[in-house]
Image (cartoon, rainbow, N blue to C red; front, side, top):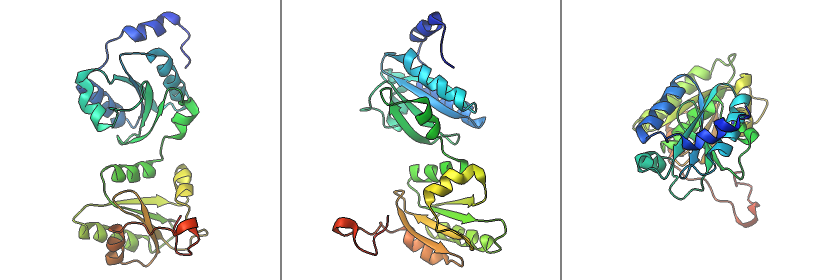
Length: 244
């Protein structure tokens, strides 16, 4: 996802030395260990640092469980992190949104960044688990359930067996349909409501939606679909078999 009013403070932001690669990584990990989201202000030689950081600071004021850090992509000491985040050809300055589990969920150049956009880019806890799986090129099984569903344990067990069949290369994410903090993630997944049984959405290792299952499920079918590519729609998207 505090306005800087002291001009002197804004000016000194340009003069502060940029944090080295190791320090930036350590700072991000430190904030993540506290459960904080990180708004990483990426500059190129410090150009527009103060005004870009001000946007991030406003986002922080809207989402207190966060921190604002800076990184100069032109500093050779930051080359490793620049490569990791895919920033060599990206515009600067920009602001990256890094979830509490360390996965980058979005990024905006200064010309497009707003505090509201940054805050809206913060994923829910379960969503960030899924995004981390995608980032690691792993298939993801999103299990959606209600605490009253007796079939949930069996479904999760089958998903774990599917992960084992994929040589451990997979992630199981459990999302409670009644958890208000996960409402945005559930809405994004768009399950067929009302749900009366535990369901599973299968994504391949490219983060592409493949299929959905309703309890009871079998690990073999889950693993098989996790290896697939999505079906292509015919021209015009008129096929009844096309997936959104």
